[in-house]
Image (cartoon, rainbow, N blue to C red; front, side, top):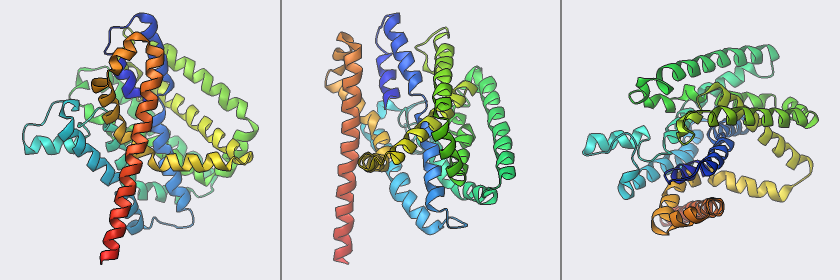
Length: 345
């Protein structure tokens, strides 16, 4: 949720010290989207590990209720209630409304929803690859190498033709094409196949994970702040080889933290994490709605101008609480309505 907030902050006239702080913070949280893709695929493969194929009927129903329907509902809300948030133009008739709805242009963060829903659609193929690999190290190495070659070749293509080229405005839809996050989804599924080996390695060599994370963070931060304009957030794109490596480092650091919680029997915190994880995507959909309300109607802009460090903590916490609270209440109301409808039949 911090990335859209930082983008708002950078619209203000700030000195270089504050810009540097925001750029460093932005780079620090520049892992959330690939980590979420990794986690979703990991979870689906884990839950269906004993089945050779996905139970398509149950799977489709669950994904519709938990991901597709909330995405469509929030997209509609943004287009109707906050049409000024549209990206790459505005709708002016029914065809352009439909385009903005399905392209992820309804709000600045919905490009990611288009990306994630693609992974949910191709999940049967990912499941098939994971079943083919099973516990074979030979097949694992083959898939990791081939997918790595495809992925980094795609990044090089994207960097040359889109990120640093005139095609940036015409080919912007490529930033939400599933190939752009391929290894995070595929490696998430494969990680479950070898989760015991990964857990043992991370637990015994945790210092390697922490060291790699620190190196990659300061590496990507240096690359970002050395750009000619650190307020241009596209200079810190997900689709740079350096950022891909950083995201993988953070993912395995998070994996390490999860292992530590299990080892030290932190059951209470695990329950809280599972609760938050269930509503995480819906809260993500809601976060821009709330940060814009706080920014525009509750004078948070003035607070930021007085003290940027206190301001970013307060607006982030307020956005986080309002996003989770709103989607939790909506979900509970929805469940009660479904229950009443079932009783009336």
